[in-house]
Image 1 (cartoon, helix red, strand yellow):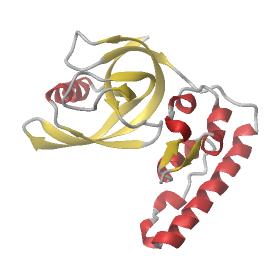
Image 2: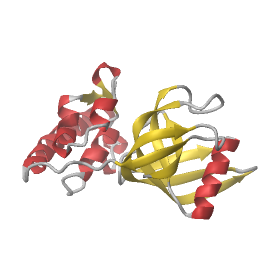
Image 3: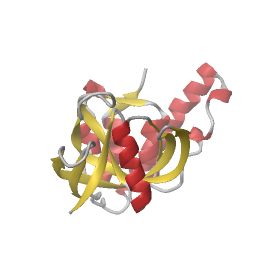
Image 4: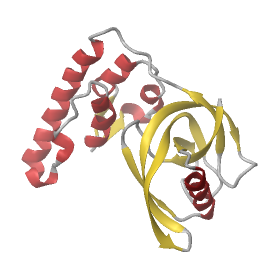
Length: 201
């Protein structure tokens, strides 16, 4: 296990996907500065209770994703924009709310459990077809200029499952996000947009 600075957000970061953040609070300015100096990642975790900014530290869900800072844009006064790339999933074993102005977590890796050979490929095809149908619908309703690279899904069998929920602006049926994100089963995640998710309104 290791210690990781945490950034609770009202969004989920997936492995291999980018996230853009505007850093303006002093506590997160200090956290990002430390990450840059020590060349280490931070962790993005979905907020269970609380606010992202300007309040008490939020209560996070227990599964998150590491984020490696790719580029920063200083804005003056310590504020900055940054782009980070999702790395590896982790599980929080304990939280430290006292040592720093931001959350830190004692974490351990939370890898996927590989499915039976061929299962992910079959379910990827089901997911791809549904995403393409949805994107075709968006094109017909909004015009092709509103859909760009979202229609060009990666060939890798796993990576589309990280990108597709983001591409189709999904929300979780019943308002519950944790069952899919917290699973360790590749095959279950491969069916997530079919079984658990629906396109956002």
